[in-house]
Picture 1 (cartoon, helix red, strand yellow):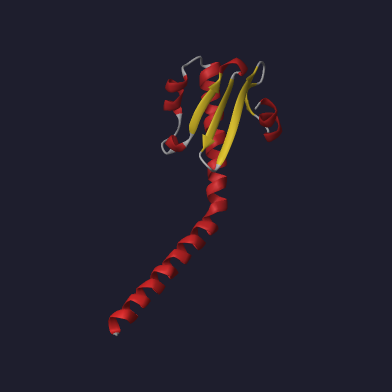
Picture 2: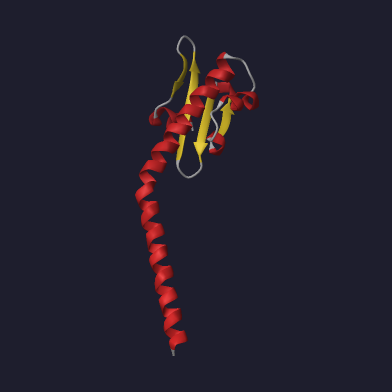
Length: 115
């Protein structure tokens, strides 16, 4: 009989651990989204400047990013002179080269208009 109560106890411990993990994720989600948004914006702006002002290739420009930015995916809209940066499931930002202004981050409304 004690074997059965031991299994029941393990189930409750595992359930409690699962609930703690879910609570920790929910608690950390706003900070993770903010860091992801900042990382995407930083990456888009740096790579846009490197690509369209510095004249270097996209692959070469990725080397300019700080360590830890490997999670950010970059793509280029060459005709629009725009770099799109995405952190999967979290954030996306775009920077566009504008004559006389350099590379500027686009607003959400501007990004939606070009997609």
